[in-house]
Amino acid sequence: MSSTQTREIGIIMNGVSGRMGYRQHLVRSILAIRDQGGIVLSDGSRVTVRPLLVGRNEQKLAEIAAEHGIEDYTTDLDAALADPMWEIYADFLVTKARATAIRKAIAAGKAIYTEKPTAESLEEALELASLAKAAGIKTGVVHDKLYLPGLQKLKRLIDSGFFGRILSVRGEFGYWVFEGDWQPAQRPSWNYRTEDGGGIISDMFPHWNYVLENLFGEVKSVYAQAAVHIADRWDENGEHYNATAEDAAYGIFEIEGGIVAEINSSWTVRVNRDELVEFQVDGTHGSAVVGLFGCKIQPRNATPKPVWNPDLEDTRDYDADWQQVPTNDVFLNGFRQQWEEYLESYVLGTDYAFDLLAGARGVQFAEAGLSSSAEGRKIVLNPLSLA
Ligand SMILES: NC(=O)c1ccc[n+]([C@@H]2O[C@H](COP(=O)([O-])OP(=O)(O)OC[C@H]3O[C@@H](n4cnc5c(N)ncnc54)[C@H](O)[C@@H]3O)[C@@H](O)[C@H]2O)c1
Image (tube, rainbow, N blue to C red; front, side, top):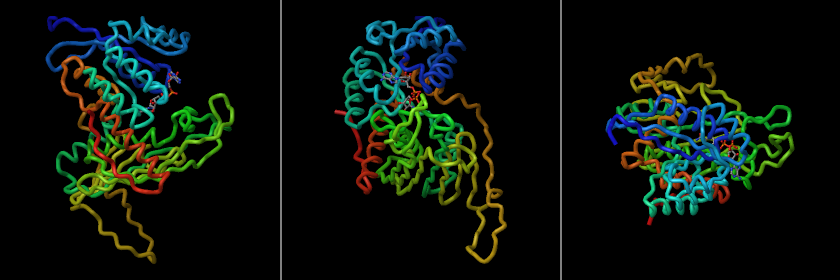
C-alpha cells in the first residue's frame, strides 16, 4: 500500500448502547477519529476506522446508526466475528457478559480491545490473556485514568524529580449516587448487585491498580474494608431491590520502594473536594494534589510549619500555600488517545503494555480487595505471568 492510501480498520463494537460504549468509545473516540479522516501513524501511513455496532436490540442500534451516519449494525455477533472485514473486537458490555464474548472473539482470530475489568475472576482474566497470547493476538484494555490531564501533570512531576523520595499517596474517589426512590440513580442498578457483576471494588480497583503501577511502582499488597452502606435501592423501573454489592471500599496498598497508598472509593459520600477524584502525593522534596484536571504543588522550601495548639484558633489559609501547575499541553479525550495508541500499535505490530495481562493484574488487585475485606487481613500479591 502506498503511504498516500488510507487503510480502513473494521471494528466490532459490542455494547454501544451502554454508558461507556456509546459516549466514550463510539462518539468521543471512534467517530471522532473517523470524522477527522483517521489518524497518521508514526511511519507516516494513515488509518481510519469503520465501526460495526453490535447489541441485542436492533431498534436501538438502528437509531444510533442513523443518528451518526453508521452503515453497519447487527444483533448477530457470531456472523460479525466470522467476517474477516472486521479486524478488531471491542467490548463494552456489562462485566458479567464480557469473558464469554472475548473468548469467542479470540477463537475467531480478532484483535481485542476491552473495557475493564476484563473478567469477573483472576482465573478467567488469566485464561483470556493466555488464549490471546497463544493465538498471537494484539490485546488492549482501557487505562483511561492515566490520560486524565491531572494525572498527566502528576506523571510529569514524578519524571522531573519534583517529589524527591515519594512517601505516600492518598486518594479520594466518590460522590453521592442516589438510591433511586425519590430521585433516579445516576448509575446502572447492576452496579449494586454482586450477582450481576456489580460492586465498587470490581469497578474501581482495576483503575487504582494501573494508576499505582504506572505512576509509582508494582503493588505488593492489598488491605481493604468494603461496606454495603445502603442496602435498599430502586432500579431503572423504579422497583425496589436489595443492594448486595459494596458501595464503598477503604483500601491501603503497599507499593515497591516502601510507598504507602491509601484510596477510598465510595458512591455514598458527598463531595467536599475540588474534583470527583483527587490524589495527594507527599514526597521528601514536595507534595502535589491532583484531580481529573487540576494539579497544585507545594515544594519543601515553601512548606509552612504548623504547630498543634488546640487552645488557639488557627487562622492560616492552608489552601493558599499551594501553587497551581499550569496546563501547558492540549489534552485529547483520554479514551480517544488510548484508542489512537492502540490502533497504532495494532497496525505497526509494536509492543502494547496495556494488554490483557495488565488487565488481569487489575482483576487480581480487585479480587485481593474482596478477599481482604472478607477475611479481615492483608493480601500479598504474587507477580503474574503467562505460560
Ligand atoms: N473506564 C471507565 O471509566 C468505566 C466507567 C464505567 C464503567 N466501565 C466499565 O464498562 C462496562 C460497561 O459499563 P456501563 O456503565 O457502560 O454499563 P451499561 O449498563 O450502561 O451498559 C452495558 C451494556 O451491556 C449490554 N448488556 C447488558 N447485559 C448484557 C448481556 N447479558 N449480554 C450482552 N450485553 C449486555 C447493555 O445492553 C449495554 O449496551 C463495565 O464493564 C464497566 O466496568 C468503565
